[in-house]
Image (cartoon, rainbow, N blue to C red):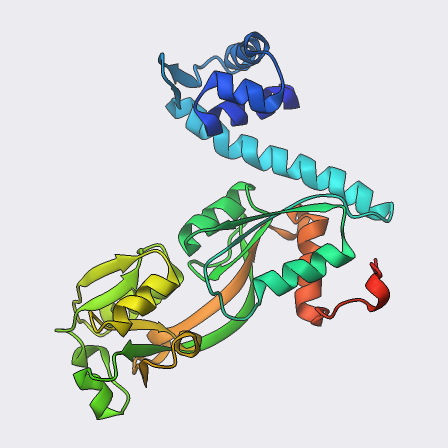
Length: 304
């Protein structure tokens, strides 16, 4: 099995189309097809179901994809490790993050990283915490800043960034605003909720707090960005339960502490593959974050 066969296979799986994958890889379509057929012969199993419009993975193809992505990620990490030993950090830093993550200013961190390592290409993807964890474990991302969704495993480890309580946001004219005191999940069972997609960290935290209290709630207004959530609450269309730092993004809203103990604690982490599979670029970014080295270098210098 050759690495190029795996690279070709992953490209076709991602694009679900031979022509588009061939164009991206800068190879002929016939050569790409021959590469996939060679891989299928070696594995003695079809990897794709081919139609006139697209191709989809077979069960064997889905099993291979996870392993192929991990193998290719390890190969990239090996190349980058050798370059790092030679004194130059090169390659690609593929980073994932949830929106408005606590404990790290992503834009400032990436700007500082680029100043120090200009030869590294930075790629950024926003998604929910569950999807980000899967992408790091599969080797598609070097690391991600997200909510802690599961315990560490042999494919995924976490570095704690911060922990904060959850807060109820409501319009100043809402009945809760006049109470001016902390509220518990059982005080909110009849409320209309604005919340994120179920894969997002704040939604998972809130769901866990209400489940622990035995309170059923219905999310009537579901959004995928922070500003839409705040706008809906600002129009008094519902209330939201969010990490405490969200209250600073819309000071006009009333913020009330949520009672709930451990179930209502929102912990953000840096998700990474096992130490041996962590790329030099990812290690450099975490070191930069942990040491707080975000200042602009004097005279535009690029320290190593």
